[in-house]
Image (cartoon, rainbow, N blue to C red):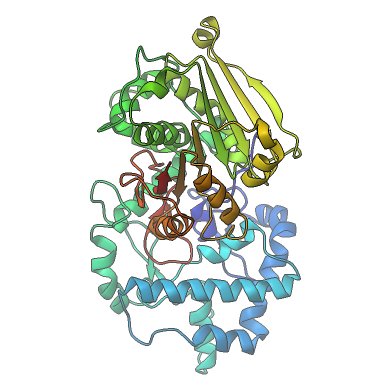
Length: 472
């Protein structure tokens, strides 16, 4: 199942062509309507216009003919620069929400994910949150003019963070060039931005050579001779040398971009193993004939990334059958479970080992209810980036209650600290006693491919980046 590539971050910021995503060797021209995105040629703009036109007109209307929008957007802007992240994040989230509300009214529908991305990642000053659009509107309000499509000044080193004046850059310097909480290896916010740019360039290579979506899917082919604890291991140490041999990267070239890209899907298998190890009192689970894992809130990501789950078999040589139940309202199909026998590697096939996936289009509590007396407890229930405290607040409480009452071993992950802490509170409120090592805390086997936070001026998130809570 191939996916079309979502416009990468530089394209959303107007730093790359929004149609072909190319950054270099072209003179980019801003869209004259919304000023948000750029194109490398009239041909790319023409090809993209049908898709971009509705949102372009909605964004333009805010600036040109909506006095109510102008009054709403200016009300909370700080008069002086600040590095108080709570203040900055509250302002940017409110601003993004207001923009999307105005756009929804103009569109007479909710914006698509791609359209929402133009708002979530809109460039803004790091210490006052002003955007190019707000600067133009503010100038018009004061009786001056600012017709430039870009008024913000980008960081000359990373080009992904902005300020509205040299004075504001001075105010933002410590924030931008100091260590970032979300980073690894004590990198700064600026250094993380440069890493993000490198990952986008890696996606460009993958999209051109392998997968149009830009995703790099990889899992080791070897089978370990015995289960080895994951304690103290790392992505680089565990997969670096093996991946270098597998994909043929020369010794003089770094493996970090490859490992970061692979971790975005391989995190699912490794987080399952990490959770099982922490939530079991001994290693008897590693010697079962059949290991059963239920994935709650499953989506297309678990389907397209199905191959990485074989790493569970490869690290548990005594397991004969791995059964995954992918359960979620967004799953294709119907309420009746659909069982699929997946291929295994040649060595697993020779040894008679099996990998079975079951797809269920239902909430987990609905699935358990429909199973009735035939329901069997899995070895682990896991929800990847559930959104239980964000988008999906209405569907999860019944599932939380069921997991706690039936004492099912469970683990929930989240994209960032904020979501993890909010979800941990919901789990505790449902009666769960959370394992001390499983949240809320950073996930040592979360993806290390970081993405700048939307509707914020600072910080990053990652797939399964945090553990919200594990319990039994």
